[in-house]
View 1 (cartoon, rainbow, N blue to C red):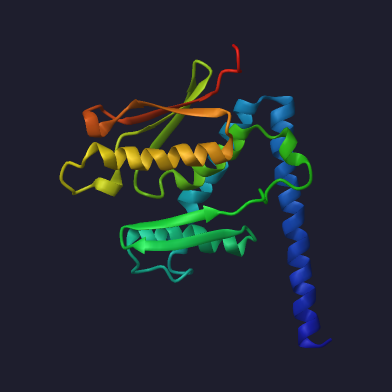
View 2 (view 1 turned 60 degrees about the vertical axis):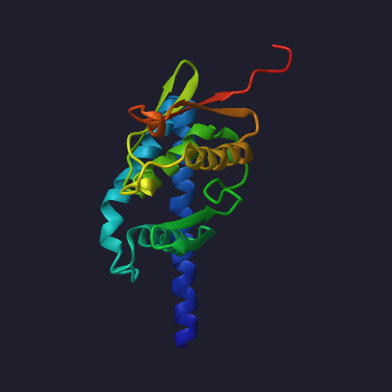
Length: 215
């Protein structure tokens, strides 16, 4: 058999195995949602991706050629390269040594066919909490309270080591978060509960559903 035929066969075999694992993973999520609850599925997805993050993040730097890069750039490049290897469409842009951007391009690759119809949006957010929430060196705590989702951060690496910033810095940053949420679901509202730049102990946001018209 020619070398090209062998390579093609090996590639097809790997693609088949990847599809089996991918479909099985989606099936596990749907099973948890339908037979347990959305909250159980959220916690399971979060733990799976947080475990993977802790196990693979730093150990993959040398393999991916990221040693010696600034922390922010290496972090973003890791997510770009690791997802690209797995077939996930991702965009990456380096703005400076202290800031880089990662954009996950739709469609939602992990949900084949109509599977996304059975997955609560909280499960999708658990992917990001598990794999990205510690990527900047800031820990995020997310929890449910009073029918709304709350996110809390007690540090902000973006301004670490800098003098006191104008309140406009947070407001501009917060405007980006509002835009992200609007793109994700235009019927959700982002409310700022606490602000470290105004003397509070944390940055805390509440995400809730917009009241129905006339309610």
